[in-house]
Length: 77
Ligand SMILES: [Cu+2]
Image 1 (cartoon, rainbow, N blue to C red):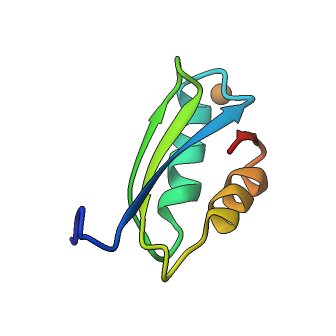
Image 2: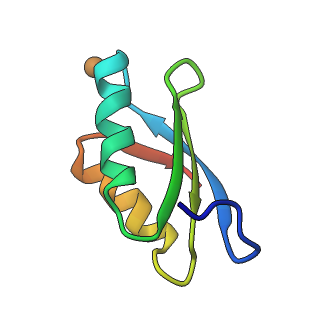
């Protein structure tokens, strides 16, 4: 698994609606299922997901859509 290459980008998504570890897992899986996503760390307390991805393979909009499809709302960025 490639990690932290020079062409990777990291973004912190602020997510609304996560209330328990199951929500956390759902968001984690939704993001990890996208091609081009290398690493996902969902923090339930902080209500955020730190995503490392390849911007040439997947865009910020795709990340946000995946979270939305899973039933949660991205409030930032
Ligand atoms: Cu939950």
